[in-house]
Image (cartoon, rainbow, N blue to C red; front, side, top):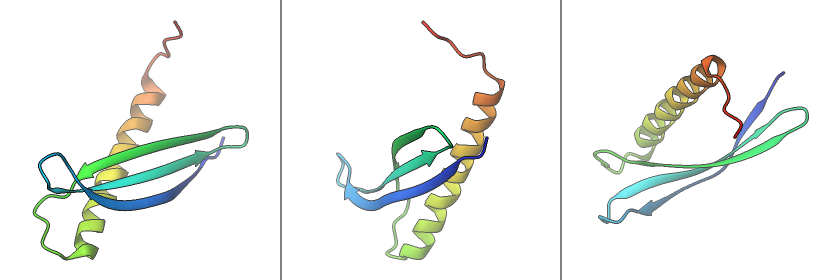
Length: 80
């Protein structure tokens, strides 16, 4: 089964300590299902270089998706 991942929204907002964090809404669509996820992550050492910050965020998300896929493929599903 093939899935398509789309980023629906990416914006920045302050966290509870008034530091910047990135917030992203992601949609995963397969042939018969649609899942929506919301992610947020801290922007470390924000220097005003938005491109570098987005690249860092992108790399974090790619690592997160890979780890989640590996875990989902190897885990037994609990249905209680």
